Amino acid sequence: MSDILEHIEAGVMTLTLNRVDKKNSITSAMYGLLADSLAKAKEDTSVRVVVIQGHATIFSAGNDIADFLHRPPTTGEAPVFRFLHGIAAFPKPIVAAVCGPAVGIGTTMLFHCDLVYAGDNAAFAMPFVNLGIVPEAASSLLVPQMFGYHRAAEALLLGEPFMAEAALEVGLVNKVLPPTEANDYAQNVAKKLAAKPLSSIVETKRLLKMGQMDAVHARMDEESVIFGRMLGEPAAKEAFGAFMEKRRPDFSKL
Ligand code: COA
Image (tube, rainbow, N blue to C red; front, side):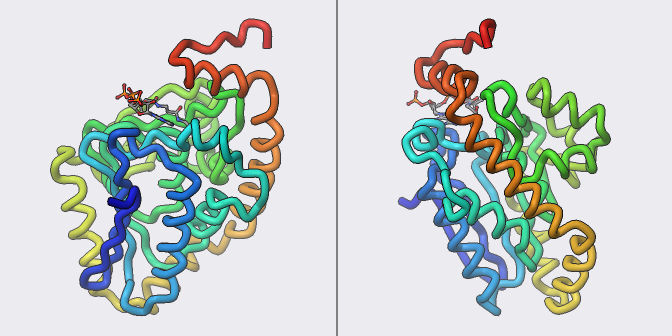
C-alpha cells in the first residue's frame, strides 16, 4: 500500500500519511506524492477541500532522516520544496487532523493549513536547533507571528515538545478532541466547507493570506539556502549521525 493514501469523496480529497511503522516520517518520494496530489486538487473542480491526516497514534516524525541524508534536497525543485510552496499557495481550504507526535515538518506544515483539529495526545515539536539546522516551511516567520516572540523563541530555540492544549492556547489548533474522534471531526468540518460556495471560500482564503504570501515564499527560499548549507556542517552531521546510531548527540565541541 502507498505511504500516502489519496481518497476523493463528496468534494473532499483526503491525504493520509500511511507509514506508521516509521512513525509517518516523510521521504522524498512521499513529498513528491503530496505535492502531486495538491497540484491535482488545485486543478480538479470536483475537489473543494483537502484533509491531511495521520494515524490516531502518530501524525508525523518529520523528514525521514535516513532518506534525507541519502537524498538531501539540494535544489529548489526538490520534492520537499515543491510540497512546501504548493501547500503555502494552495487556494482551497486545507483541514488537518493531528494525533500523536507531529515533529519538524509535521508541525510546520500546519501553519499552511486553514483549520487544525488535534487529538489530546498530539505533541508538537520543532527541534531544528537540536538537529544542527534551522526552521523550514517559513516557520521562522509564521511561528513568532502566531505565538508571539518569546513563545516562538521557546519553541524554536529549545525545540521541546508541547502538547495539544498548549497548541490550542497559542492558536495553532482549533479544537482538541479524543484521538479516536479527530479524523472524523476533520472530515465533518471538511464536508461543511465543501457545501459552501467555492468561489467565495477561495476568495476569502486569498484575502486572508494575501498580506504576506510573497514574504512566505521568500522566507521559505531563504530558510532552504541556510538549511542546505548547515546540513553539511559538523553540528548537523553529529545530530543526524546520533539519530542513526540511536545515541544522544554531543555538541560540546561545536
Ligand atoms: N526518520 C526516519 N526514521 C524514523 C524517524 C525519522 N524522522 N522517526 C522515527 N523513525 C523510525 C525509527 O528509526 C524506528 O525505526 P526502527 O523500528 O527500524 O528502529 C521507528 O521509526 C520507530 O521510531 P521510535 O523512535 O522507536 O518510536 P517512538 O514511539 O519511541 O518515538 C518519535 C516516536 C516520533 C517521538 C521519535 O521517533 C522521534 O523523535 N523521531 C525523530 C523525529 C525528528 O527528529 N524529526 C525531525 C526530522 S528533520
